[in-house]
Image 1 (spheres, rainbow, N blue to C red):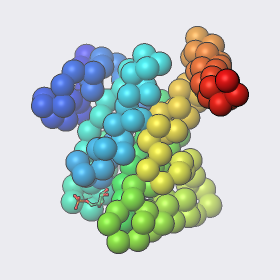
Image 2 (cartoon, protein in one colour):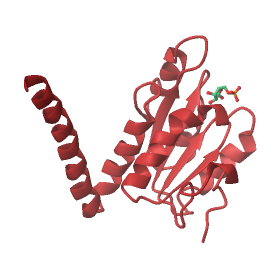
Image 3 (cartoon, protein in one colour):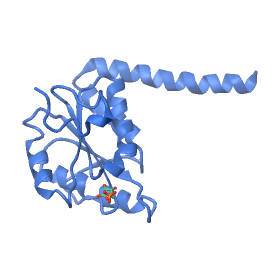
Image 4 (cartoon, protein in one colour):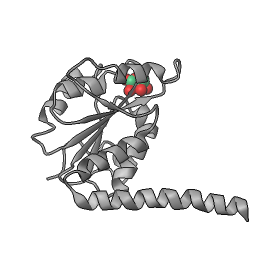
Length: 179
Ligand code: RP5
């Protein structure tokens, strides 16, 4: 069954929607997409099925409720939510689903993303959001893969491979400097 939440824009091309998504990548606005696409690309890299769509906490509150409340029964296992400014999306989603929520603070135009970071990270006791660094969609994707790896050993193996590739990259630079 193809998720009704994906793809968000046919113009974005293929690779943005999978059947039976395990991860829901949602964003408060299409203006957040440059920050959130790296999360999707990381899920692509590890062949984790996901859906990607826009859910605005403030402009589409009814869609937010429907999305968050149906997420676990639709088969999602993790939600990655990115937003900027008064970034209520990740926290509100976390309030309405038992799934782990990873928040991505998006840097807006005025306050350098610190507003988003504080909005997302300063959750009240009882409703956690795992918050990554400002504009770091890549780490949100990686964290989702690690979480899924707890029950999907092939993803842990793949993550080991990824870590080795990072190590090799740095060692190559060291080598280049020294020769
Ligand atoms: C937030 O407001 C969005 O997540 C976005 O980061 C910011 C600006 O949104 P647009 O006005 O560009 O749609 O809700």
